[in-house]
Each structure stands twice: as C-alpha cells, then as structure tokens.
Image 1 (tube, helix red, strand yellow):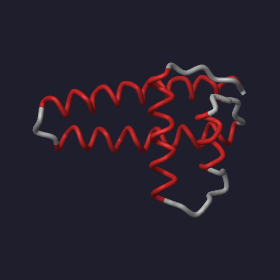
Image 2 (spheres, rainbow, N blue to C red):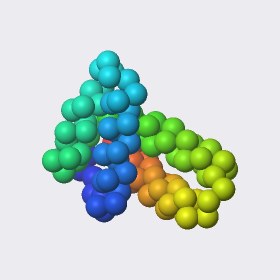
Image 3 (cartoon, rainbow, N blue to C red):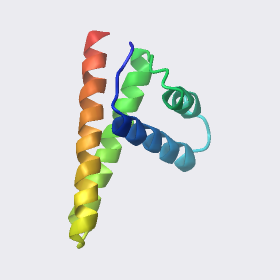
Image 4 (cartoon, rainbow, N blue to C red):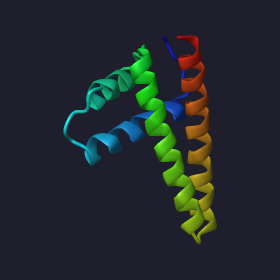
Length: 102
C-alpha cells in the first residue's frame, strides 16, 4: 500500500521510528531500521504487518504525548505537544485507512 504524508507527518513518523530504534536497538520481527530507511527515502510502500506495527508505535507515542501534556506547566510547551498530538492523529488516521484497504 502506497501512503502519502505531508512533510510534518513524515517528520513525526521518522522521529517516532528513530526513538523506537534508540529505545530497543535489538531488531524486532519487523525491522524498525528498514522501515525508517524507507520513510527517509520517501518509499512509503508497506505491507499490512508494517502498517500495523507503525500504527501501534503511533498509538503508544500519542499516549506518551498526552501524558506529557497533562504534566506540563508551560503554555508554549503544551502548544507544541498539542501540535505533535494532532500530527500523530493524522498519521494514525492514514495508517488506519491504509490497513482497512488491505
């Protein structure tokens, strides 16, 4: 399935994968590094398992951002986190749509 993301959405996706790669350097069944390489190269063709993996990561990252929003005291930081949450939601919507098409 070929996906189309805006630049900001690609940045969020790449950052999410980079963070996951740093967090668990041992390769998972689906290679985070391979998916990251394809995102950076803008070769966004994924199978169902990869879409599902990305959706799981995006869901976990969204929850992390929601938790950060609840703890932050700074309005500027909160605005940045809200923007990141919106981008993650847009990415998730596209991933869900792509999963439904497969």
